[in-house]
Image (tube, rainbow, N blue to C red; front, side):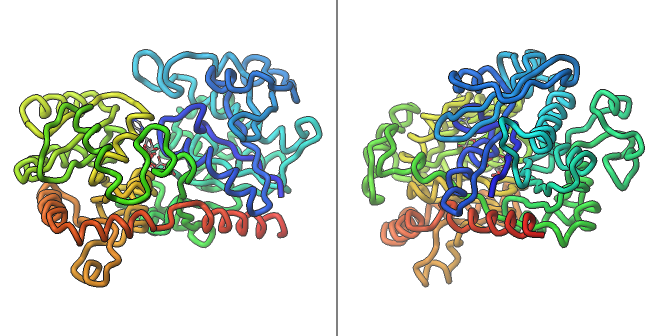
Length: 473
Ligand code: ADP
Ligand code: GLC
């Protein structure tokens, strides 16, 4: 089976969040299932650089304003098709944002062009290669199912929702520049409150929809989590399923990780913990060294954690935070670190440091308001870094809670709090400290966590089964 994956970011080339990890890890996981996945990426500078031996396999005429071409090649073990369209992608800095920190004004066209190219590759082939199915991700891939339905209805498509908060909205007067049929500007197609929504187009026209955890698949059907698209999703409920993300077990492996002092048992965390304390300028302490590695946005609930942190530091615990995003949250965390001993903050994005934090931390805190899947709790499990999470989305599906029953049965891997608030976080942090001080209970949790399956095996088989059902039909 040949699948074309359409993604706006992909590790290890370009990454702003978990989508990149998934786009990069799914193809090798699928090859074990007999599925050959080729990934179509925008030709951002980092992607072009990775593909130095790329071969031109298609020349497109005018692609939304200028000529472009498709290059094929292999990089980091992945089969890539790269859309070399300098008028859209040859820009430095963030892939989505201009120097003013706002979305590039032509983002709708930048990703419509990617989706158009996907449709043309499926229709006309790239050097003779054609996919049996197109798998698109998030709003940036949302128009691929639409263009396929319009121009190549025989090829099925899957759209995966990684985050419904981003919906790819554009003013209605952009229909022509996005190559959309004005006849589809209605509530049953891509019209969304008087605008164009690329995500909604995908939700309507994809053959099947998936999201990245079973719990989020249910949550999406409710007004609280559906962010205005829950009605559309309820209509398509029979075609929507949740397939949990896995992680790359080679990249995230405490026994081989080149960024850390390697270990295979919880006791091996000690040198990493000491090094992490040093790195963050934190002294010795009796309580747990907690970490946060996150985008600083409303979604992640870190404003609530900021209020609750004294419940940790007041009990001898510490917190090291690495994150970037929302300016006022960055400032608030920096200011808190100035006045609160036991709290140390790094504003920025640093992949290597994130590995050292996983290895050195005792616990990782993820108080998300919503979390389609979440990957850092999975890294935490693998590194014996106990997750304290909000009971939502994929966080609910991946942690076995340290309830009295969970502890007594010896199966717990983390802590869950519900409902999420600064108060419940304070209680959660207090319980974390209490569990940490009971060495046998804590070590048992760490061992359970490190054994918990977090790879792709099960989910890759689920995707393969889904593709199989659609291509046989
Ligand atoms: P989301 O995609 O919503 O940001 P995920 O948990 O799925 O959440 O994925 C986030 C990914 O980005 C993880 O791989 C995490 O380690 C990484 N990450 C987030 N912030 C940072 C940062 N400041 N530095 C390094 N890695 C980060
Ligand atoms: C999104 C979600 C996150 C998920 C990731 C990969 O960015 O916020 O929960 O893990 O996509 O699917």
